[in-house]
Image (cartoon, rainbow, N blue to C red; front, top):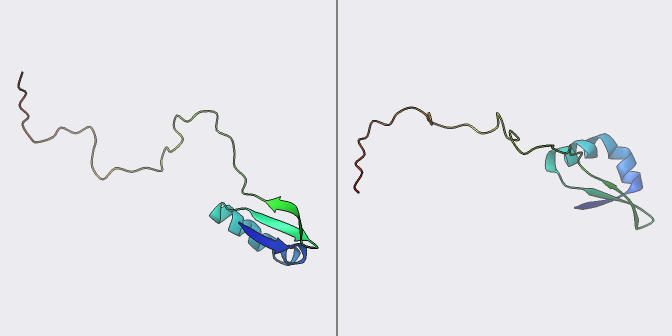
Length: 75
């Protein structure tokens, strides 16, 4: 968490918004040494966790192709 003065925030606002978006860390903005505001990354709420990481995870091999090994089962 970063703490900055309001005057510095005013001068660097657009850059700080990009930093918060990339790092997901909040910035506390102060006036006269007292916290007055927080800049947080915007997060959308998810209705369902099903499919949340679709397209983000990739396998190095095929998970459904048959394996060339013979398996034996003992009872």
